[in-house]
Length: 396
Image (cartoon, rainbow, N blue to C red):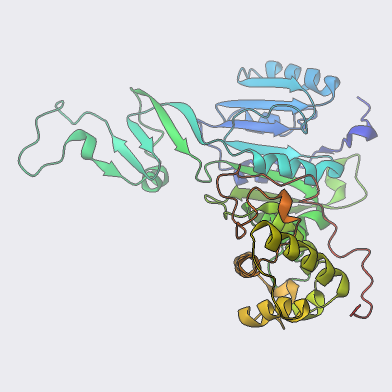
């Protein structure tokens, strides 16, 4: 079957890498796995034996037909295949996502995936345990049947054990006899194992102080942690792409920072425009000060506040001095520190977007009751780093 370049089709053929992807997913026998871009089914055939259901989504009708035939010929009945664009189709509900993406849609799909945070997830299991967030209620009958507890003894519903200990023991899946609905909270209960172009993946995983640390890494770390699974050389694909790849595991953070993401991204664009410079050098630029002063004056008008009598340059740079960050470089600062800096600026009435467009002009950087991903567009995860920015002198 000829592969189509417009779809970015490169079939992974190395069995060892395919096995590592499956292992990284920690797939349970109760899990629904969403596979993006199954191709001819090399990974699909490894997912089907370990998952309750695999839902595969591919834009190419030929691949949809091929993976269906391959599953049937191997006797698997737990595969659902849909034709559609991963950037537009409904992803549904799932526990694990596995994807070998066309590299040109990496940042766009990452946004879709991280925005996919359902308030709860229900799956069916055959077991004798009712699992709730953080604990398991043991409903197995005692030997000899249920009996009235004696004084000081626990009742059946009071017998709790930790969810992790049950899973680790291997006993969780051995139990049979009672069909239960298991509620899984939005506590990082799903994960994704994705393949990206090596350079993009390296930036995703970068930590403060790393040479690859950039706006992409900082923005992504608001929503998840990213871990390396393995590097994949171009020779392991048919046809070989021009670049090497990396497989990463993405685990959502259980709680998001409460902030306005347009504000956050405005701060990030200033700081990572020239990430190796100090914050003092970045914020003293005339273009930055002019934009922030305009937003400050708007904020003062909307909130009926008297503007500072000090020169705005001193007022603005004073925030860096107060937070002790004036001599820190963007590449060395973690997201918690950036968040504190954003709040410090907002407390002074200094905003990084036109405050008239914010949900509350008097807010101090929090998103309040807004949607968790409100204010995020397709450019939020663009891997632009500091390309195109000449590191010339300061424009005082």
